[in-house]
Length: 116
Image 1 (cartoon, one colour):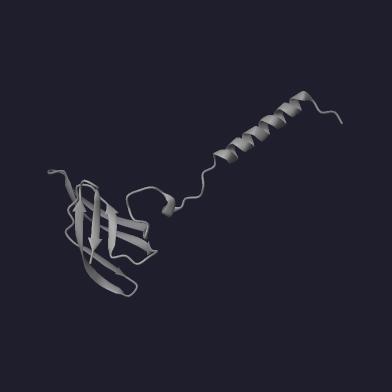
Image 2 (cartoon, one colour):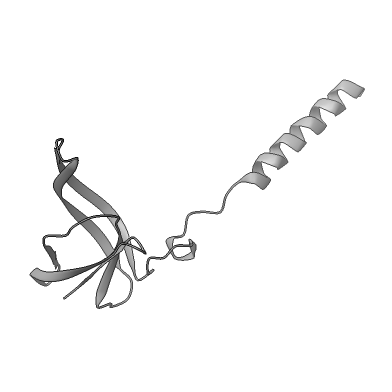
């Protein structure tokens, strides 16, 4: 069997390319290990957002529904926000029938803490 130098170079380049792709692969996403200011007790599962723009004053009205997975019991829900006014907030789900909540905005941290 005869092996040429060009075949060895090709095999070496192929092995290096395959190794570099494997070495650059990211770890699977894990919400609990990602940095951020939001608590890790609740994991967002999906969002539904409805917006109605008002072009003259450059504002909008709207609503948002967030589907969450609760990992540990908590008395608050913290969401990202900036320069929003919350007219009302409520919670519903398994065993909960439209519980009215209060939203406390923190424009410095750019969060809204919702509690009942």
